[in-house]
Length: 441
Length: 56
Image (cartoon, rainbow over all chains, first blue to last red; front, side):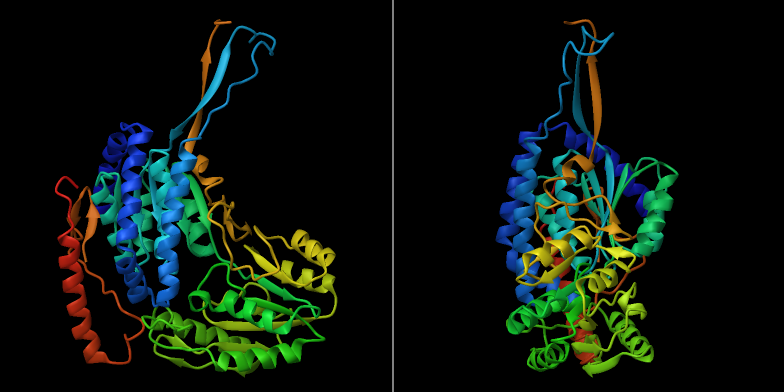
């Protein structure tokens, strides 16, 4: 608690210090930060892999993406234009000039997840800093090291130590102390829906701004006109990314009944070839989950699904934190996994369907609505599905575990509140102010 | 593990610590894991401390 109080008091000072610098100077510092990240790319990637178990090639990709994210927010910051209202227009306001400016929110608490520890750090910290805020980062308990390394590079680049801080510890305790303070003006979380709701309740007391990126149980829908080999690769890419620990992973595979058996058999054969092992090795496709505890949870969820009537087609075994890629067939729409049971591991759940309408209904029966994908060459069907599935994004021609740093990334329904991405987020970390010049016209 | 608070490296006020486990080897080689983790944590800490900016 003392640490949280100290961090908040420091952040209040750090925000004043930061915003006293004009944007171009802040941007010079952040450009230096990007250069330092590029110099330390391998070290940061290895830190991610060591603490989170992410295969090294993917960790390198994550570090590369944060440079682009930072760079994009720098550019966006230079065009954060306010608006000038129509002049000589409104009865009684004919002689006024009215315009808006954006101001920083103040102090932001950024709670980052274990699965993309640096990518989410960048998506939260970059817009906060560009908009002139101070940030207190709370990394996930399993993955604090990479965030500390990254923050340290920011400090070396010249971001004041009180402007960007990293506090570690249990999320449930620290979160409470960090949010129950009126000096904190906003909270941004990537995490579970349950935690997101708790944060929103806590934030109500001081009316803090809340941005939530939460869970998902996304579909990848595969029609019978699509090439089987490509469909298998899309399914694997969508589900095995970060060993199945992605909020927008392809967790429910909706496969047309005409090709379901062939798809399942081919998928099993493909997964038998997947290289599982030490994530520091270059060619490993499937690493461990973030912890043994996480793997045990997946094991229980798979058992529960089998008890509800699913067929174990492949996998289902655990060794420490490693969980074998697993294929569950004969999933019925009434099972938990077909609705809201989100499995954070390499588990392929296959549901059959006969009509497009039936598939859309299954997709939409989940409380979640983050992303999704549709594989077909029939563009009419593709658009129908993309339009009808209630999610924040839909990918036509690929899996839905796909993101652009520019898009407004965010979930519908229970998957989130607010959006994250260079096209949108800067405004979310600012407050708008209107200034009147009375009787000047 | 130290935090970055108020521009300085900081221990938790209550002295609590937490372990960072490499999930890839966390369970398989128990004794190696301990040694390796101690080695890694010490080196990482030295690495981090060598980078503290004076005016942080």
